[in-house]
Length: 186
Image (tube, rainbow, N blue to C red; front, side):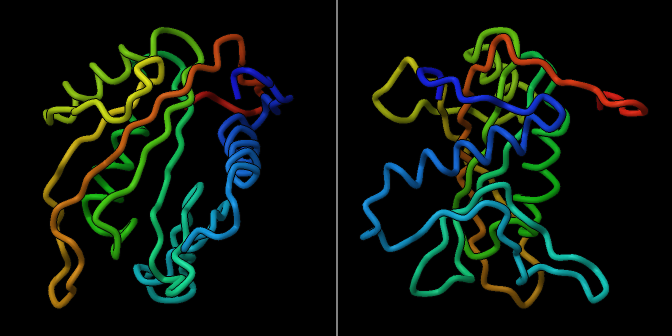
């Protein structure tokens, strides 16, 4: 994505980048994988009673044999390596409570970094989660690590208790949020 620099809508950076990333991943897939990628799929397993809406992932790799089983990916725009509150909240409040990825023993957080060093994001995530991050992959140019957590599994559910969270940070230096009238940065 850094090589091609497709146009990104600054009014909605997270969705705009994720939508482009979805298409780029599809282009790399053969079609023979036991899964497909989907932008914005719903997690019906943990949906509250109607009229509540089910949780929706930014991206998910959906198992073809059982579409209830998804490998969820949540994305967050990070203004700097220290602006992590929404990123960490998704890990703690969604993944570790089994609201996200109930059938999966792992999932991923994508950080879209607007300024600063990607490696600093991982250092700060490790400190704020109070959990060691282990580097993954062989491409050291890309900031990616994994943390392992114990989840709170609801009574009567056989969801995986251990959860591996993959952290992938992509640099988008030069991109800026475009605020529309009445909008505030969170």
